[in-house]
Image (tube, rainbow, N blue to C red; front, side, top):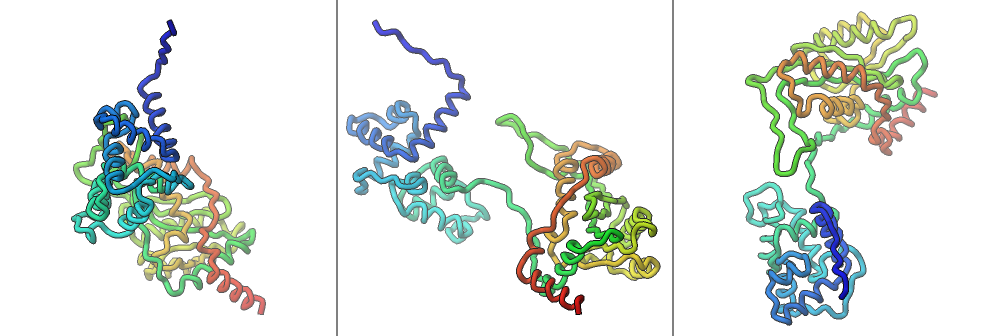
Length: 364
């Protein structure tokens, strides 16, 4: 009598093996052949799905394509994109065409596509009835992922190259008794920013909101040479907060070590007030350089502020604003320095051309 072979596999291991098996089957037509042969033996879709460890929708899909004239010969599986969708070679094009247009053009009252709406739209377009889970697997095969979008500013300043070129020139030719700083302001709110975090399957971690939101404002300046951030807090985002930051910079960069201090700022109104101009007139060592309008990528301190949100303010559970402000200060003091490089937009051809013109002008 042959001995019975029993293999003990945990549920997680079985799930991993099934997932790996599905990936391999995308490159192999044997699953479709097995389904056809079992259907010819009058097996039910439920029995076939249980025996082959696949979904019932796959069984129905093979049967539907067989009735419409599809035949598995000759078998072709040349690349991953066509092998993942072998029943209809034009199906990836139809799926991508749907994804590149808003759902409202297909009659849906939605702003984003879901797997279910894609499946229904494919059925209406192609007459192919598939499940939402099958569409999800197809999207992963095509290289698409479900991710959060990011906000992007309207970067259309006509003088963009002319403003970026002098900043890049200073970056490349900064002298020992000069300092180049990038400044900006950050809102610190008691209302937590919602974000991703690890949590058990089937649950969702709750982050309580305050009864009344409170705010503090941070003004910071990042040193391009040392990577250090100098900052201050204030109850309002006014020119007084910006002048307070300039006072901190004047003390932190004494005259005996620094002859010239360049501060790069955006076009926010508090940087252009009469009070700021009077402060600059009383401190001739300082000079403000202006970034292009709506171009946050040109300011490296924005990356530091994004890191601050990720490590401190996102999903925080502080109940008092002063505790959250203290957390932000500790983060800026302990987790630096931030030795960043300039964004690639400073290397664009138009900026390089403007930079060369400035160098020729200085040489003349």
